[in-house]
Length: 293
Image (cartoon, rainbow, N blue to C red; front, side, top):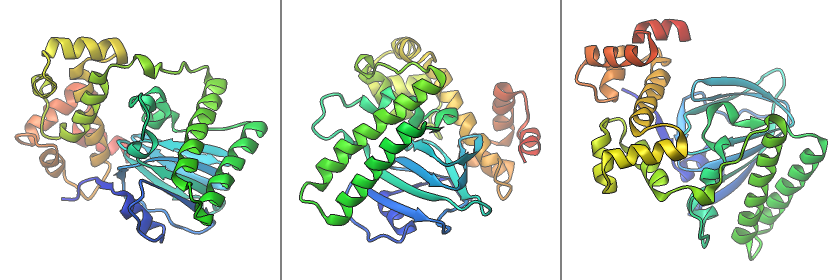
């Protein structure tokens, strides 16, 4: 049974034929040649991509979109994604990969990245900057490229500062396009961040609110109340959504039987999985597979 892999930063460097390093970030430029892999995957890094020319197909979670240049694509570590180039309009891209530990070094607000939903929300992973914003973003990526290629003495600090600028440029484009309200990261509670990190580590095998509350040393009621206040969803809803999303992604892989999907998600048997899936989607796993393929 093939699980959805989480690619390390070193694995990603190898994918792009780059020397493997222990840095918590790297920059790559792709020019009209296929370096994409069709297998669904997660990553231990965040990424910000600038699509300069051409087009690519991006599947994030259950959303598939054909993205045309110019565009910014933002992906967080927990997002299951695939990317494929459009053969009729080959892409030219610049991509910055970075770990949260790199970006948030020496920063007092360790929940900074949670203030930008476009890293995790499947229908907000790309945006179309106007001419002025495209020009600014292009200059920032060129600056990062020049800094990395020159082996600058303060490479990490310069790339880190540039990444903050890119995040805020992306946020400005999103807000101009759809009037989206930026989450005030300063008001986020540590409990939210800690729960989400624990959830994405354990949800395949742990599905009770009690488990997460115990690990966070709070009561289940308090956990759900805090999550509802700051995210709009209870702990139980977060857990169920994580399992259902993983199940839907796995079911789209025709090489896996329903029984194998059930086993990967640690259900007692296929029948229990089927009842759980139907209760949350109104489809049996097989009905969903047929409708999705």
